[in-house]
Length: 105
Image (cartoon, rainbow, N blue to C red; front, top):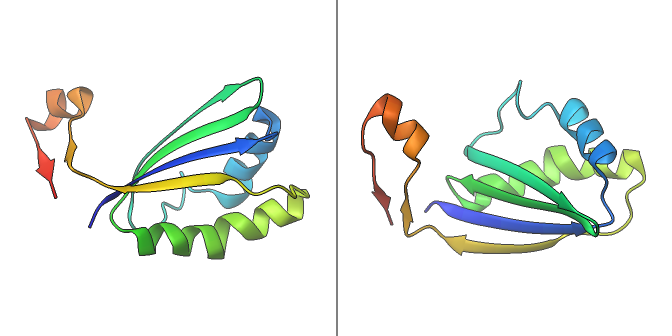
């Protein structure tokens, strides 16, 4: 079952995020089940929205790849994470290239 993951991680800076991107290499070595990732910052920290094929795939990524690197960087606080079952997905840019694709769960 596809999931939407929303994360807020108070105090994480863009510099720390960029180090994590480099060290975890999720763009060069895509984690199993990853569909979509986007991030944004406000003055309080980072906001992340992901789509995953399953909650299990997301948890495996967190446990095996992300958190070990987070610990190496010395980030002590944990993020607030909310997970929701995906109802529908519409990605206009994707649809321009690959056609109108609608996913419902």
